Length: 403
Image 1 (cartoon, rainbow, N blue to C red):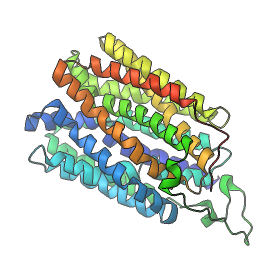
Image 2 (spheres, helix red, strand yellow; image 1 turned 45 degrees about the vertical axis):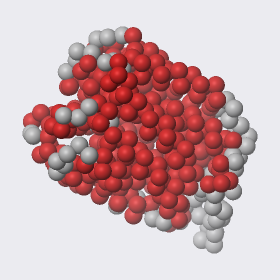
Image 3 (cartoon, helix red, strand yellow; image 1 turned 60 degrees about the vertical axis):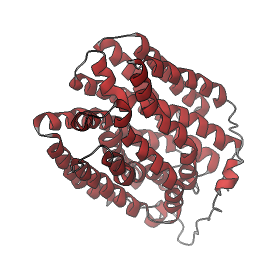
């Protein structure tokens, strides 16, 4: 078997752990912490906001390291940060400490076990079937969303929440570290080209000139992709981080709120496999456009419908959208900017994505605090995504900046 497919499995597992245990489960963890410290909804969202802010600040540096240092070493750092983050979270004694834990430790898990490293790894190992490999790996985020919210909620129900988080941190460490140890940084280290073709012993891989942030800021495609993705991430983060409190406000239990996240994740599996399979054969702009249309539909469902069945449909729609978003975004960056600079490009894009992404979760919480409902937040997100669709097709697919 071509070792690249084993690495696709490793990427699947690492995305499952980091996204499932941190991003998908944030609202599950936020509820008992918020009750413990009597925090407002806005304050409860500060953890994910600070984590996103810190990740955006350091991601250009991380992206540069990804292209010139060891992916395996960076992933090990991410596994350690994620595991210690939950242990540290269990030791907090005040609300202000929670954002510090997310910004200093959880940030390492989301960045160094997330698309920045996993997509870079697969972009090096695959060319012809890059979209398929990215799609398979991205399914891990949905599986994580299906597994971890009810798992963590069950741990919290069975144990005191601090004890539950310590168990979670230990389990994450025991699973993530052995997986990272399987990583091989590039196919050349196995005597292979991308896609598994044997490499001539005398072959010297070309070295691409590093892409500067200033050059990328002059690239229209880079700016347009950053705007579109920032709108998607802001909406996705805002909804995910408020899902359980939103569900409880509509009369559902915390367990049913966690199940809504799981329904979102299951639908994401379908979306990622479908979009990943066609990403190598379609205009990638249409893929992102379809994702945005699905998110708009889900926002309208959340805004105007009630009951577990309707909210499950809304969760499934945004799950399908998330399924298309990650593999298509990764394939689009690889096509337009090349695999050699993939880490730098993704890392440098994060500071542009960060401002709107930061605004998503606290904006939803603020609108709830002011109006007593999330309806205004959902409609705001839907309107912003309509603008994103209009901008999407200004991307020029014939403009390739690979050097």
